[in-house]
Amino acid sequence: MAIKEALKDYLKMVRRDEKGNPVRLFPLDTRGRDQEETVFIDPKVCFGRMVIKEQGIPVDALSERLDAGDTLEELSEDYGIEKEVIKRAIIRFAAWEVHIFCRQKFRKKCDCESLWC
Image (cartoon, rainbow, N blue to C red; front, top):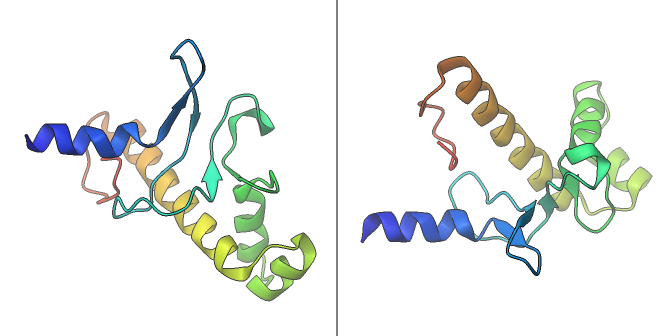
């Protein structure tokens, strides 16, 4: 029964086309909560980079600007997105990157404590 519940959370992340093929991934937050679908990954959009749903802005670009010293206020003003949306998107992006790194480095379930491991 526990496996069924865990799989249900993972399957909520995937959108399928009319044939049932997976076409888009909506990562849940790091604790598995089903928040609004702020970001998604789709191989047909921005070469499969994680983007903010409504604007299609790559989250890694926002993260890089934040790392370079821009503030959430500046990003919000430049892109016309609420600060909270940007913040949630960057947190999901960072958690996803940690997960990908751990999978590549350890080739198994890791201890990064993200939802995906």
